[in-house]
Length: 42
Picture 1 (tube, helix red, strand yellow):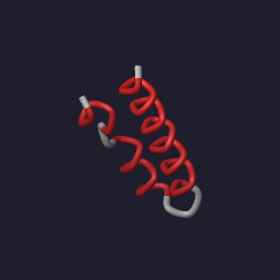
Picture 2: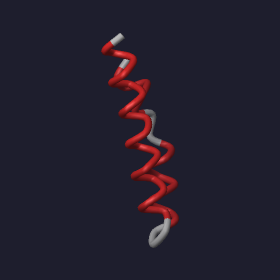
Picture 3: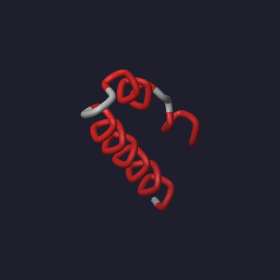
Picture 4: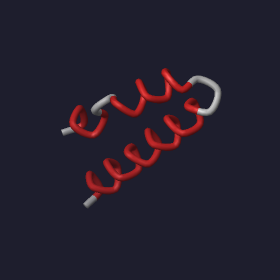
């Protein structure tokens, strides 16, 4: 259960970072969004 919470939180953080960086730098925001963070945690 703790692992699921960590995975969900990391997904939320990566989405938030992608949204915030996409405002001034759309290419960098797309790069952050395309990174497979959740699969790297598996």
